[in-house]
Image (cartoon, rainbow, N blue to C red; front, side, top):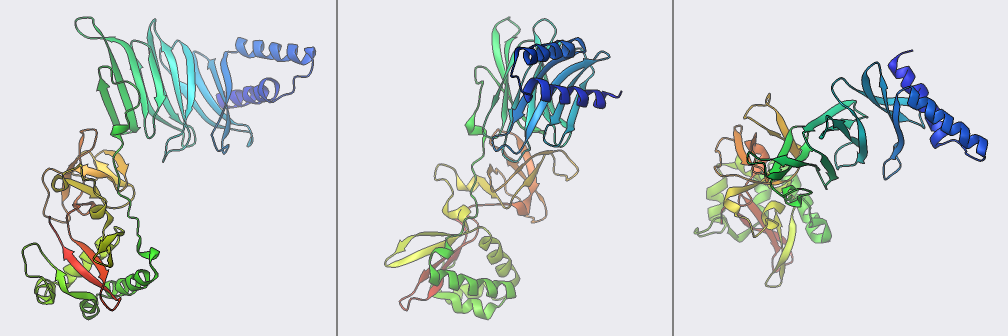
Length: 389
């Protein structure tokens, strides 16, 4: 009998007799105890049920030994099949505990802790659905596991420095390629490592007149219709800080640079927009959202906002390099802005880790933005198209 077949047979037996089976008499109880003892004799060390909060996954977990190896098997009771089996070939002295981890953006994960030597322990993170081992961490001393909002904190206790003084060390698992290590007494979850984001929410649909205007505006941008865009421009539009403003300056800036104008308008339109308040009696609508919602506590000159969902963050300025993580609409630190659109941009993540993204995937919050307001006739106009601060 193969290892997989043996695990399946044990799991079926456990599922019926020890977890799901009825126990209605002393005979049934004795039978269950006898079955448990039999499984122990065959090398089974642990079995339990793990279930996700939404009840989408209902698994049985079995720990057993076979021919000197230790196995962790995950069995889908409803589908009656083995989901995943992890085989450890190494000096582990026994299973300690496990827990189900549910993080945003990941399938259900199994975090398990195993005994290693006299004091040591090993943490192993498994992705059963994708049949992957995501992370291993070995400690000479006991460790603890805590599920955070978007990461897992594995704290090593009893580690000592060169002078023999006890210290703590916590490894924050954010993704398979992004592990943050914190020394000292900073164990447990750290919410500050979660990057702030500015989603491209759009308020234009909240006002029927604005919603209709933006539909017409979008068509003009899509068709690159400069004549139509000029109709939408207010006579006193703000084009720059320090300039005279108005239609003449707008034409001077964009009449011979229409391709850049339409590319820029399409880009800021994708960033959403916000009804920001009133100018006199007129309500103002500005876009993109990364300008209107950028935190006042941060320096807008040395920060940027990632443009899009699931932007890959690379260890080096090369697509073949390691992907540290993937982020959506996150605020990142940018010390030195590049000038070439297709180049790489060096950024700093909130954990202090330096990484790279394509330049076109990160945008300054004080790059070009557009604002709109209604004129005296109640018609919407573009009152600002300006960059800088």
